[in-house]
Amino acid sequence: IDGTLPSFDNEDTEKAISEAALIIRDTDETVAFPTETVYGLGGSSLNDNAVRNIYKAKNRPSDNPLISHIASIDQLNRTIFNDNRVGEGLDPLRNIPEIYHPLIRKLWPGPLTILLRVPEPTSLSKLTTVNQPTFAVRMPSDPIARALIAISDTPIAAPSANASTRPSPTRAQHVWHDLQGKIPLILDGGACSVGVESTVVDGLCNPPKLLRPGGLTFENIVSLGGEQWAQCQVETHAKKNEQVRTPGMKYKHYSPSARVVLLVPAQNNNNSYYTSNDKILVLQNIIKKESQDSKKIAILTTQQLDQMNSKDLSSSNEKAQFIIQSLGTTGEEIQANLFATLRQVDEEDKVDLIFVEGINEDNQGLAVMNRLEKAAGGNCIPF
Ligand code: TXA
Ligand code: MG
Image (tube, rainbow, N blue to C red; front, side, top):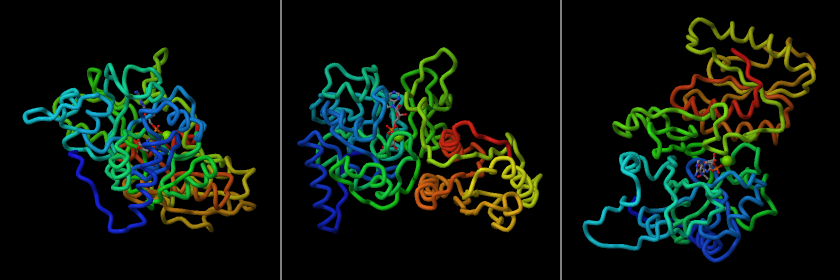
């Protein structure tokens, strides 16, 4: 968190990052860049016009606030808190409430986003916070992201670089698919290692809350955050009559064009009750009911359906073609492959129906199931 810069032994990489950094620092334009979670669509957090261009390029509802990305605590102090003080004995974390300190020390840089009170005065564009009293900030660990933020010396407002409602991009080609012609530059850093967005937490309320499950697990936060975070509550759905805490959670999201059906493992499901064969029989019945109008169907497997092949399925719909694709077996693998696989079967294989074998909601399962429930938009079947 001290702002030590990564170095690249490739001149083209350095040139591309410098070019992107100048766009961020000196213009109203936006650039797409890799982070360890998903690709971001970045513009200066300090420039209203750049922030407007972010909303415009991805067609994002303007009441959904943005995360500011920083490369060091020093940069956060100088550029958002207007605090330029230097000197021995000054705590670098002086502008950040104490409750966040253990999380920041252990988990930044990384996929953790925290909410802070907007300072008065601040240079932060009001459009990034949508006039809320808080702003969201994170320090990504991806070296290209960190170099871009540090070299531009600008906090970068960046939502995921997908067109609004689409699955988040975890490869440069996903950004190209959604935003070509709308932005001047995409930095291609290969596949994102985490594959889902950062975890958003609110430590300004008591008890603290997890507002969006993401790349850092709830279990990580509870075990690493100290006493106060041991009481952390998960609040991803607003209760009735309550304002949505994380505005992004209320919109249609992560949706392929194909219809998605999520197969939800029963609560406290002890999968050992069922053999893979039992599960395949259950799936055959579900396919019979759900797929009569479909011509091309993808089945994304995670656990018990891994042994299945198309022959097992053709009897449930003889007219349809089946694609069976594993998302992986560990939580990390499933998380890393999730959006890329949804996009692949949707945009390349052009299936019209996607069944996904869900997983239990512990560890990475919480973020994975949160994204899949949105992608399925309510088409959830106990499995
Ligand atoms: O991993 C990530 O977080 C990626 C990469 C690019 O860093 N960014 C990302 O941004 O996912 P976006 O805009 O797609 O999601 C930001 C989420 C939204 O759900 C938004 O509502 C919430 O953070 N958010 C932002 N500012 C907030 C605030 N002040 N209070 C509550 N929620 C906030
Ligand atoms: Mg997003």
